[in-house]
Image 1: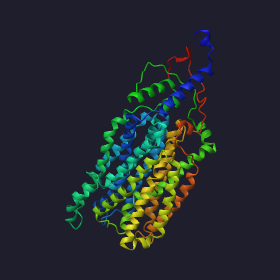
Image 2 (image 1 turned 30 degrees about the horizontal axis):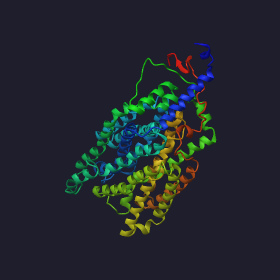
Image 3 (image 1 turned 135 degrees about the vertical axis):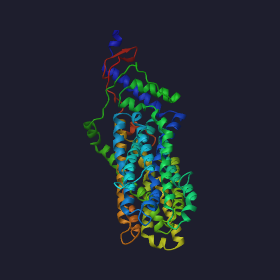
Amino acid sequence: MDKEDASFNKGDVAYVLDERRRAALAEVDNAQFSWFHVKVCLVAGVGFFTDAYDVFAINIASTMLGYVYGKGGALNSHQDLGIKVATPVGTLCGQLLFGWLADVVGRKRMYGVELMIIIIGTFAQALSGGAHAVSIIGVLVVWRFLMGIGIGGDYPLSATISSEFASTRIRGRMMTAVFAAQGWGNFSVHRRRPVGFILTVAYKPLILSDPVGQPNHVDYMWRILIGLGCVPGVIALYFRLTIPETPRFTMDIERNVLQAADDIDNVLTTGQFNTDADAVVQRADAPRASRRDFAAHFGKWENMKVLIGTSYSWFALDIAFYGLGLNSSIILGAIGFGHLRNLHNITVGNLILSVAGLIPGYWVSFLFIDSWGRKPIQLMGFTVLTILFVIMGFAYTPLTSSPGGKNAFVFLYCLTNFFQNFGPNTTTFVIPGEIFPTRYRSTAHGISAASGKLGAIVAQVGFSQMVNIGGKNKFVPHILEILAFFMLTGIFSTLLLPETKGQSLEELSNEKQEGFLRGPTTHIEVHDGIVVGRRVQV
């Protein structure tokens, strides 16, 4: 090393590494939309399609299970609650666990593991049986809990991977496209062949030909309905296991700037990445995740209020989203839209709710999220939902007392589905995937998502316990009024959040980026302005 090279000190090297990091991140943020971005959306989206299918299939499957295993042709309230709430409980656990693991072990290493859990849990449900020592409902509860753990892992992993690979100008649309696959998963339970609608049409002659409903034929139906949920997961598994590690994880958590810069060049040009076992490993001195660092970062009000805002907004939203989504058959039956004994009518009713509200809402969000912004969409959604639930709750009796009123009620119900998705159901997923530092992005998204699932559990338990107060389905209007209150509180939690559109993930992290890297942690040499590090064991 000559005198000029020797003049470089640690501060000079820190500057070079810091500049290289910022240049590499700018390359990702300004990248043109490419086939690789499409691949990320498809691979992540298939997971959400599977998640929604598996979660909402139980809405119809529970009715089918009641025909076969329930007394009087229906599950009792405890059985129905058990199989519906098991998945949200598992999902809550999975969101916290996989959110943390993705920040510690890596996005790539955990991506696919959660999908394997979903596949195994789904297939096992279709093969479940009962005996003297254990009922089939108990077996289903266990497998749906395990499946929920896998589903929970999908939230922080897919959100983080899609946000960290996306360029700034399309990040909202990429994340929304991933999440919108949930709508198609929900929809396919009811109509897309060979499930839902096709199953009920195919088996309808056999069911109606016998006065007791041919429970043996219904036993085939629910097993096929649930079991087919693992098919898209199997198809996507290979692609999840082979997706590259995000450059931001490599750069900011593994602190290997040189490898991350090389990964960015390869991924953006070829969609592939290469790992050279003999390559130089240069660890940079960057902020590292730890309990003390976590407490220091979120101990500041400007950071803590963001976590509170994302978590409570998701909690409030999911009280309504899952309270209605997992009980739409009960509400349709309460207003006389379809008798619970008629599986065909129930399926058609759920189909109407999906087509008229759920799916359009996702894609209207897709159109506006990068232009209008996340915060305005979320505020608008919570406001409109508050108004809709107030009308549905306080005007329930006049709306449901006549055929025209029932149609108006169904229309309002469809609007709630629409403004949940063109509103907080989409934005509560997107914002936590953008707004936290890389070293805590997945963990904080997992905390936010787990708060949402806590809301889903509260809603499901509360719905099951309150719906029959005063008589069968008599408390439905008051439940709708309670949902209006939670939508109102969601407006205030949204005010804690900043707007995220058009800003890089580093700008949103609320951390100073100039000087983010403080220098190398290994011996280095500098030749002609190029940082060269010797290989080290890590």
